[in-house]
Amino acid sequence: MGHRRASGHLVVLIKKCFLKIALLLALTSCQLAYLAESSYYQADLLRKRVPLKYALKHYNLSPQQRERIEMTIQLREFMENKLKLKTNSNFSRYVELDQPYVTYVVSAAPKNELKQHIWHFPIIGTVPYKGFFKKEKAVQEVKKLEAQDLDTNLRGVSAYSTLGWFEDPLLSSMLNMKEHQFISTLIHETVHANLYIKGHSKFNERVASFLGRLGAETYYKNKNKIRELVEILEKESHDELIFSRFISSEIKELKEWYQNHQSNPNLLALRQKRFQAITQKFKETIAPQLQTDSYKNFSDRELNNASLLLMGLYMSDFSEFEIVANHHHRDFQKVFTELKKLEDKENPEKALSQLVAKLTN
Image (spheres, one colour):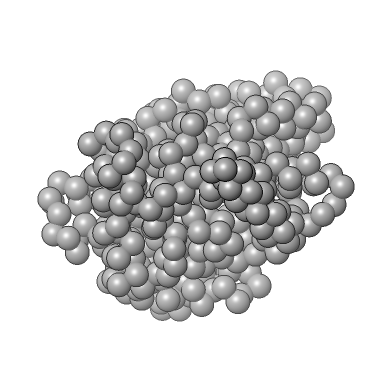
């Protein structure tokens, strides 16, 4: 009887998810299978949610996992009262996953130019990636894209936002992060649910990444936490700025390089040397400037157009955001309010640059 009720509850959830995701993805023939599968796994994820206090009482948690869940309760209150972000019911419940990541995200790009392969979805607009709840499905997508002679990148994701369409739970995949990264991630995902511009994935990720770090900085200062933790954040912010400037510059130069070498029959062989040059430059000029090990594995990565563009998506130059933040004395609420105004702009990147020019004049 209990099993029947549980199964019936899952069916209802699947139907609800199917309808909502149908609105997000639209019922085109090529998306039906993906839609049905996404609906099932999203519904199953929602079905498994339990209140945070229930998880603390009944689940077999490590000391760190327990600490992160208890911290989430405090963080939700902090985001609502201090950062003035709407949390709704997000992160008020917990899901124990049976895999290391909640989703696996695929991105792609042509081999002969630095241009993101784009997926088109109604309502959320165009996005340069596609997520799967099961790794084997993501691998299948990678093989399909590679058969089209595209560069690909596959990565596991510990957290994601449904942009307010569902009540996002706290996931077991998030609990093994370092404390400050965990805090930044929760704020990052909450920003997505508060500020989102259709068709501007890169800008959305830049905003969420920057505000996630600024929010964590605010949290530590508000809690009068150990100074060493604040220093870690400041060092990572320092490294993030240096690396973002580096990768943004390299992507810009590589785009021009492809344009100048399009007619060269040895383009693919030459680009490997170009990738090696990027890695060598990082080792010689960037790595010595870094104060943490956040980017230590960059020189070991096998670069291609898809992986570079993904880094550019999340790690674009944050200099302009820093100017806005410093103008407002790093007051999170004021910075968020300023950036929120860009939601109704046709070109938020240009509007941000205009804002910075106004603030610096």
